[in-house]
Length: 352
Image (cartoon, rainbow, N blue to C red; front, side, top):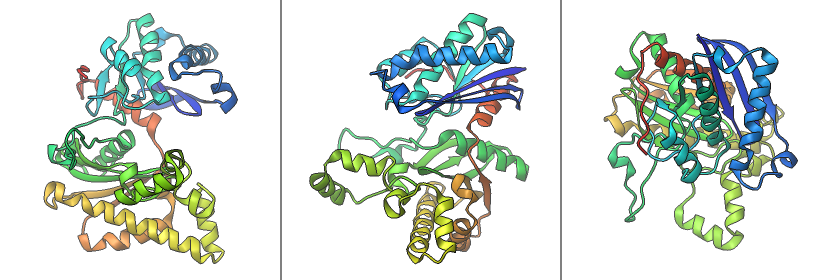
């Protein structure tokens, strides 16, 4: 069965055609800042991005009727569950009118619905970053009217958890796995019996390649007063972490600095590992220490020096550590679609 996979991002639109889980065609279309500045609002990009998808299909010889389903990155709808969700009018309305945050991935489900409606086939999203199945205890803030939420790398952590479950020969929904995604931002998700019950999201996790990570709340307020909110938002998104500390968001460059004898770079690597290990351990109380494995994925998991430093700090736990380096979003979307189409997983109806 052919599956069309869509993944619009901030600076690119990723497209792929899969036969079951085998990638047949793939294309990444990059968007310059100048190109995107033509569109005042995010939703103004819809027709442009839809046109690019249709051009891709024409160039590759596929029409909407060539597919069994369309699977899209999920955007940021409120009140959505992990796993697959059917794209319908309610979901599209939520993405257009009340997303939890503005993000180009919210265009994907709307484009998917257009293609699916033309072909008379189903369309789904899978593991959007706003998937929320947190333990009620994890939601409580010490201020009335505010709740914690589960925004993190749901898609990749879920897929890599399933991969580890297959490796050890146990059903994913029988395991308690802590899965950490290390990349431009770091986040950690505790997948307990198939559900994301607690998280360390990017702004409450260790600093990363380009995010400053968690900060003391009173200190954050002080820094906002001193530097302004826009500056602090930059530290939280793109201008923090190794970018601020060493002037690069490329961890390979940091590794070269260390190999060249840069003691400052070595300190920052060790600090990142130290903080990530602390964040992993903070999730152990979720299941009273009943943890079957710790998984590291994302580009940062390729850095052997960083991984060795983290594993040495976690060794006292006597819990297996698994490495799944890289970003696997497109493959994860295709695998999720196939499970739904084969009846191995039931897609949710969006209730918001």
